[in-house]
Image 1 (spheres, rainbow, N blue to C red):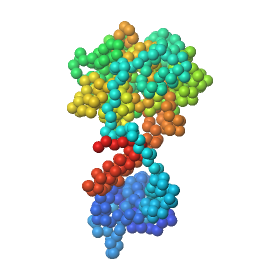
Image 2 (tube, helix red, strand yellow; image 1 turned 180 degrees about the horizontal axis):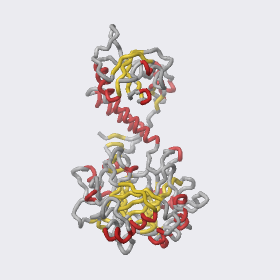
Image 3 (cartoon, rainbow, N blue to C red; image 1 turned 60 degrees about the vertical axis):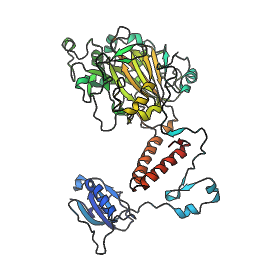
Image 4 (cartoon, one colour; image 1 turned 180 degrees about the vertical axis):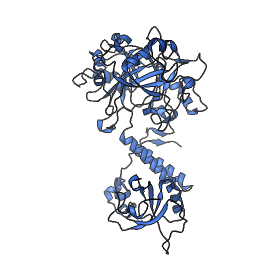
Length: 529
């Protein structure tokens, strides 16, 4: 085990150069968990010093390792058998964090006591919980959300003329709304396949999601799970979905989940040819236009025009198409001001061009920004659930794992049965836009080819901040990162659970319930047991 031991003394920020050398056991990272349990069970872990993790260093042939402070016997040895990948040595390990200052807590001032302050690590005060009101909201068990008050169909209103009207009629209600007659320049009339394949951006290289048909999909996930004549409710019409391909985007998947599509670089013009063909991926089209299938015959294509170092901006990525949308109320003005849009001034985050083959769907997910989905060509059905439905949607990352919302498998997802009929449904056609509030789950299906809506779906999706700018993640490129405060709270909850899990029963359950109760109290919410 090259490089372990004295060669690490004083190396890097992991050690304390001012500390006296202490007895330490160095083990490779793959053995760390086993050795921690052994040292703990034998009472050999020196808790006055911190455990230190060491990264690997190939130049020194030093593997990644963990250093445990240990208590040696009077003979200066460790009463455990050391195997390969372990070594005893002396290292300047940093001191452990100071324990709770209980004496300082007992000696706090009368005013602090009146405010209910308590002292934690390093004597820092913890915030006092607010007074619990008689009508306090219930945190747990999670209440089942109410059904849509207008039935399943999302409310439709004419597009407001000003941002003030939009705030009064739409955003203040906190629910999805369809805006009809959305001003979007001449884009709906201009954006034909011939026009788009000859636009100035036609030669621009795109990263396109290519989805195989369901029968050859890696995951087998689809929008429907019954026979080929099953239908999905689409508001104004029922939409056949026997060939629907569902795209499980990277930002919406649980980390480590295998994606159900492949990326292919192609020009914007080629993408338009593929999504607008009479039979995308079929042999006849491949022969006529030399567009061989990327994955297999019957594949679907989906474009989400995102940037990789900054939030996407349609005016920068597709300036000619952005010009087609003006004058209108979809994009910010050319000066960068939002005086001709519906969302608040200075809250603009990003604008994304979305192009999809007919019968392509996006997995049910939520975004952390308010957004407007403006349909320019083709049609979409958007199925939504309120944020309160989250406990019943089997959420991992930012997406629901319920892979079939039409014929759900209640054996796999029994809780989904509580909210399956609480869905909201919006059917969009050209010139209409859907307001989707932050945290609302939504599943988006591009309509199959039909005379009414055409042969492909094109929409512009605009995101804007719904919280003060400092409360959003500054590195959020796509409008779907949880706020830092929420992420920090989740990490603290994980650490709290890990700490309590070290206790035996009944202590573990006893203190877990008290911790959950403390969280509810701090939020001014109730728990119903």
